[in-house]
Length: 74
Image (cartoon, rainbow, N blue to C red; front, side, top):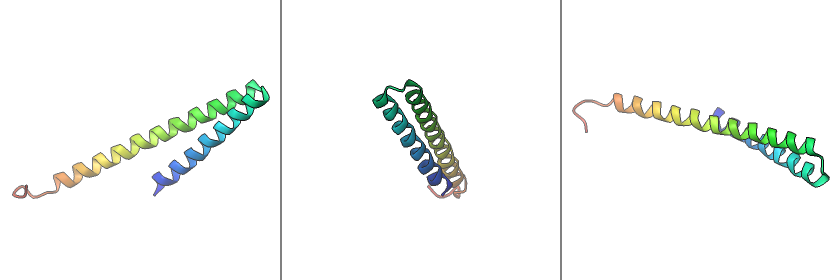
């Protein structure tokens, strides 16, 4: 469940960064545009990290399930 919560938080952070970037572009404010770009990049990086952690957890649980099978079962 924490994985889902983190994905939602990071998606919201990325959306906020995209909004800042767009507003900065519309107004010609390069500082706001850069700040939004950085915020979006950080959020997307966090989302990628969450995906890696989730994949590792899935792999660990598959190995655990595989190792607990009885030897006489296929």
